[in-house]
Image 1 (cartoon, rainbow, N blue to C red):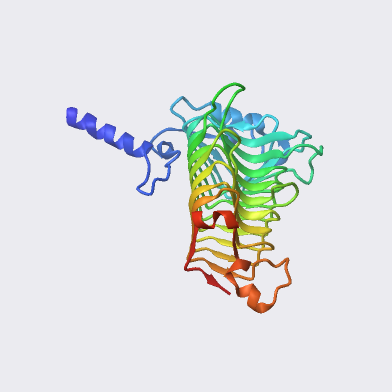
Image 2 (cartoon, rainbow, N blue to C red):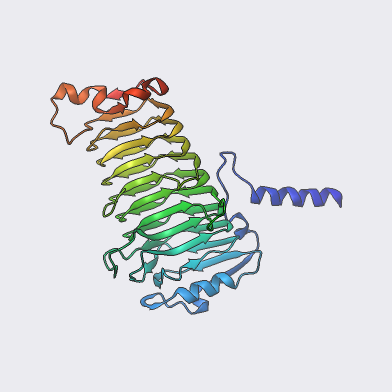
Length: 359
């Protein structure tokens, strides 16, 4: 009996834990015999005209405390971002590839289609989210997000396309009430996600710990600043620590490809393609990071710019070509390293630039 009990405990720890790569297995228990709910069974029409927010919430809330799977068949589901579809802990929202969540037009400066707030072990996968930036009824604000993750842990977003939001495609940050220290988000995995044509950011990483962004695309961000594909920018006094961005494409973002701003630390950017943005990679006061094995080209400003009190960064083994397109430089100057990697004079000794190629 004791041996069997220990075996069951070991299996449970495995389901709740992490892979060897340290990435969260959010929603792992959803396939371990838990309940399942279909949004159609709770009244969702999926015709793009009837508000389906209540039906989605009823499907999620119908699951026991142990959670389960909420299935979304193909269709166009109108969702009210003023109410949001609120995720619960241990819920796996699985959308058919043909399922689209359409944000209902509104005039609010702040609204979210999907909200994962102070929850744990949550997964959102498949389908697409279409924002209402071109049908927005107001002119103020910049926080109309497709997915908001706030003060949550062990959250996975996978194989979702998020486009045309009034604010960010995805925002990951902390939760805090006035006068409180706040809860950071932690152990977040963003895998094979596409954020396209959003107004403020493709992805914002705010107050958080251990965020992994892999095999994803962030493109064509424009409309209101900062306009980055990925912006690592925690609100004061919070920090963003242990951020990994790998094998991602950042292209056509008006502000830049990736920004690591104040109170960002231990940032790794590897194997990405960063092209035709305002800036390629831009840091201000970031601490400890590596920018390696990326292809960085044809950005309007420098391919990599380290500014402020940035320290402890290595810019290594990247392939640079044709950056600083805003300047009419002769061919020789375009190939020079300073056209591609721009480190402020007062922090050159605090960072390392080595073994890059320039074309």
